[in-house]
Image (cartoon, rainbow, N blue to C red; front, side):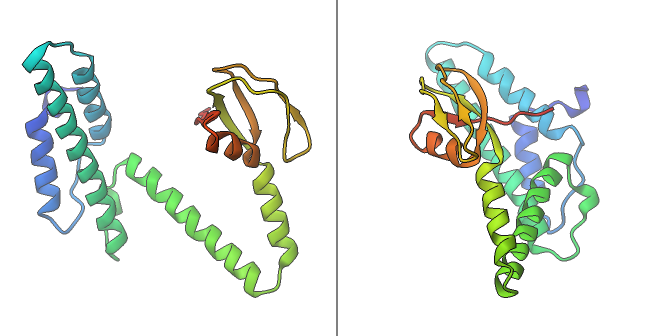
Length: 185
C-alpha cells in the first residue's frame, strides 16, 4: 500500500461523502477495499485499555459503517442507472453484481420452464440443487448421515470440514451444528 493510497478514518469519510454527493460511480483506486480491510484489521489488532480502547472500538464501528455505506451506495447507483460507468466499478463490486446477474438468469430459467410446461427440467434442476456439494465446518460432533444423494457421510467431530449435499448442509446449518464455508481454489 503506497502512502498516497493509505486509508484513515478521514479519507474514508471523504470517499463516502464524494460518492454520496455524485450521481455517477466515481473512479476509485483499484486496491481500495484491500487497503480499507488492512486499515480496519490493523485497528482491530491494536490493544488499548480504558478510554483508548473505547475510542478504538468507536473508530472500528465508524469505519465499518462508512465502508458498508460506500459499498451499498456504489452498488445502488449501478442497479438504478441504465448508463452506469461499469469501468469505474472495482473488482469486488463486479463480483457482487455477477452473482445478481446469475440470480436473474436462474429466475428466468425457472419461470420459462414453468410457463412452458418443462416439468422434467424443473425436476432435474431441483434434484441437482439438492445434491450439489457444499463445504461446511462442523460446530459439534455429528454421527454418520445419509445424504440427499443416498451416499453415507461421517461421522464428524467438532471443527471437521466436509463436503456434503446442499440439502443436508442446510439442515445441519439450521440446527447450528455446522456453518457454510467458502472453499476457494
